[in-house]
Each structure stands twice: as C-alpha cells, then as structure tokens.
Image 1 (cartoon, rainbow, N blue to C red):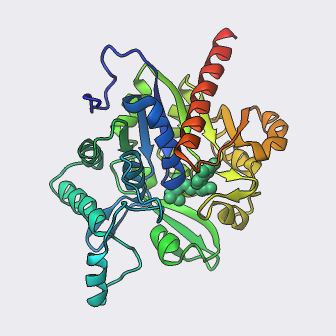
Image 2 (cartoon, rainbow, N blue to C red):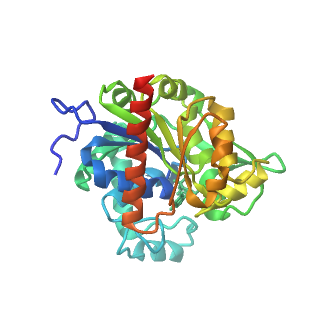
Length: 338
Ligand code: GDP
C-alpha cells in the first residue's frame, strides 16, 4: 500500500504522474483503470459543482462516486452509492414524511455525516477528502476541484433555473434545458492539490475523462485560470469522448447536446471543447464506432486514436487507461523531436 498520502511531489520518485479530471460515473470508470496502472501516481480532480446540502448533510456525489469506485466499494447495480447497502434510514425518513427523492443508504450516510462534521470543525473539503480516501485505503490521490462552494443550475426553457440535483435526480433530467451556469464560480480558486500537481515536474499528461462535458468537466475548466494553466502546461491534454456513436452510455449528455443545439457526436464534443477553451486538448480518444469521423477531428488539429471506449469490464477500463498513457508518451516523444 502507498505510504505517502500527501499530494506533494513524491520525493525521490522520478516516475511520471498523471492528472485526471473527472465527473461521476463515466469519469470514475476510467479513473479506476488508471488507478490499476498507476496507484499513487494518479491524481484525480473531481467536479464539486454538483455538491449540495441535503437534510443538513454535505453531499459530494462525484467525489463519492470516484472514491467508492477506486475503493472497489461502489454499487454496480445502482450505478451510484455503496455496495451491500441497506435502507433503514430512508424507510424511517419516509415514515416521517420527509423528502425521499435523494436516496441515502445507511452505509453511505456515514460518509456524509463524517464529511459534514469534519467541515463543521473547520477542515477544508480537500482535507476531508484526503481523510476519507486514506480511511478507504485508496492509493490514488483524489481531491475536489475547489474548496469553495459552487452550484450548478440548469436553465429551463421558461427562463427559470433549477438546482442540478433536482434536475438530475428528482426530475430525472426530463425538463428541456436551454443552458446551465455555475453559481459562485467566478469567486473560486482551484484546489492547492491541482496547483501542486501541475507544478510537479513528473506530470506526464492531463486526462479529461469521458464525463459530461457541460456539467462535469466545464465547471472544473471554468474555475478562474484553470483552463489557462492546463493549456500552458507542456504535458499533453488527452480527452476521452463520453459519446459513442451519437449516444451517451448513461445520463443526459446526448439529450443536453440536442437541447443546446450541439450535434450529439464526437465532433460535437470536440467542437464544444474547442469553442470554450481553444486549443486546450491535444489528443482525442474516440470509440472505434466513430472512426469514420477521425479525419474531420484530425483536421481540427487533434491527434486522434480510435479504440474500444465502452468500459463494461475492469479489463476494458484498464485497457483504455493504457491507451491514454501510450498516447501521452507518443505525443510527448513526437513533440520533443520537433
Ligand atoms: P455523472 O456525474 O455521474 O453524470 O458522471 P460523468 O459526468 O462522469 O459521466 C457521464 C458520462 O459518462 C456520460 O456522458 C456517459 O456517456 C459517459 N460514460 C459512461 N460510461 C462510459 C463508458 O463506458 N465509455 C465512455 N466512452 N463513456 C461513458
């Protein structure tokens, strides 16, 4: 087991390290593959703009999904929460006629209560997350995108705004959206671990996981100076498409794209990132089902790799993670030669 749980550069360790930007489910799948190959050399920065306070508890859905997945404790049937869960708390809550749209399992509750208590004691979310990952025996470094509060809202067609969890969980993504925004983002600073990871001379690549580009990755990149800092870093930025053959594997990404007037395809994803962040991304990994779009993506200046990106099994996750690392090494050697 990794003994060094600090997020500072690993002393005397010259091996490359990697930074992954992640939302919840899609991001955590690739993060798991990467963690199998890299252990403590993996740094995962998770979206926290889905975080909210519910029943007095600080809930961080994406951080928890990444933590539970990397600890191999995630509930594979539900796709969220912990395995071997029981629901006594929810049943009791229902009996008291309290809101039950956001399900909190008994075991999961321990995480939220611990986080809430540690935050109340004055710890930052980064410190709390580090305590939780150490307790869960996770080798990789997982940290929030910021220690400040940011909240995603979706804009509905009538102009009103809906909190993200109400849209995502309570309304099951049914309402049509015309946009989204991250309340408080302009006042945030990226977490210290992000800065120290970027400053680490061994950083070999920044990997944008196949997460929702709008509400999982965009909040991370919208933190002031974050996208610029990534763009200016010499390591390649590798994005993995969350869209396969025009469809999302899970969740509202494709539906959101249609409603936002963005073509729901790998081209739509690449164009979105380019429009928002210029030449941030160097390499784009797409599914082999989208290989016919490779020339068009290459004409946008991207190095493209078409492989299987559907991560059904652990081996799929590890294989895709391996492709990310090889592509990073190849890109770096080609660009050193120039
Ligand atoms: P959320 O915060 O829980 O919604 O999770 P993310 O934003 O991290 O992930 C949602 C995205 O993951 C969706 O766009 C899915 O299409 C994508 N996704 C989920 N599983 C896979 C997979 O196996 N392969 C790829 N390429 N994308 C996936």
